[in-house]
Image (tube, rainbow over all chains, first blue to last red; front, side, top):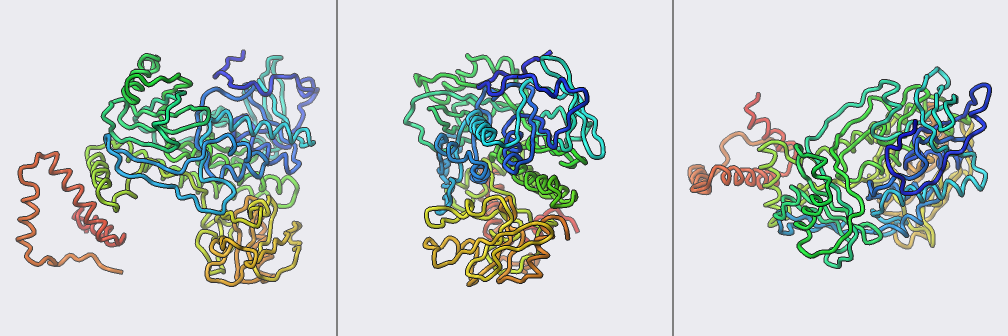
Length: 540
Length: 64
């Protein structure tokens, strides 16, 4: 009845019979989340911190085995930080900044992610996905102990759903047999193969790439490879048409070989064949243990809509990209960041249901940006026509000698947070300020004494004033907006000025609970700010 | 905005053409194609202006 689809790395939420299973009539929950992966658990963290009862259903009992996603970007860590589990991730993860690109066997250039000073979190960390999930689950349990109304049920497999106008019925299978639940809102975080998407017969369209990659995660003590991202185009070792080497914690390395489309997966997955590729790549006599391996093909696809009435889709269930650029898990976390506060406000009756459509608008925008970037990287890494290869090779050959061609080399454009340009929640930009903090942008972090700006912003609506007057609290349309008053006299690093003022002496920013800018102005204007608040919660 | 120049603009155009042919002399088809691809990229970077580059692509496509 329960066939495990994968082996667990950590059993975290063993099946326990719930009272709901014996209820005479189906128990109704405010929010049910399908899927206990990184995105599903993050959804519960977000809503649970708002005090909204959230039930996560997962068909397994813990964290799946395998490194899988390994690159976690700054925005993802900032969001995890707000949920209370960012610090242990950074402590465990490997921080890296340098990338090297090789054409055949010659290094053509190296790049530095040039992490800007004055951010609490690094540009990227590498860490095996099971660690990421475990830190989230640790936080989940902490929040439960503190009384947050969140729960996760293992071996609870949703077999069918009925979507009604104002609730969803879920038919669930457990080791004790079936039971039925109702959810006022259902969030599908059930992964790229999303059973929920299939149950609702919803389209998932896009482009499938005809190539396969072999991941071999190996454990080795090796000082020859520093903590950098190394990418080879057409390496002569022949282990793969392209090869990526990237460090993870615990002396584990990710090796990713491009092995072509027509491969015999079963044959390629044999240890002796994986080792043959690895030996060709690493050289004879290098000792290593194999940790995890997998062959993957990939696609860039998304659903037409991420909201279907009372049902939302988030993460891989809603959109899928190629792995180049680390835009999978990182964009899933941005989905949660976007949906959490909106769903919270609607459930509390503070905002109209139409606010939830902006989740669709904004995250479709994000998904399209990710798909565009990852498609372009894929076209560069695995050129599919003779001319596409010719131009790609021309870029690589030129890049070794001439600086101009280096930005054209595309071995993955690394995930940066999406700016919601054109979002219906934005007010028009009234400040001639820095482009990076225009309405729709995520607030760039900045040091504030021993602390950081993003910590001070937290997860409520904030009126950030920099050397500008404004009331300490504004009540508008049933919500309270609190002022955070800052001054450039305390801005020793100058980061606040550079990131928020530009050439202006003062500024006022209206910031959303997900720390995106909703509006900005050179000074406080009561009518304009009140209108901006209404607009940001879907009431204008 | 700069317009794409589609009127004669190279002094000693015959010399240039001869130099272009000479660069390809003795090359295999494959190496010639690669040279052309590199040349396109070098020239495109020199032009830089995105609008001009789009117009150049259109002009090369012989579309109206």
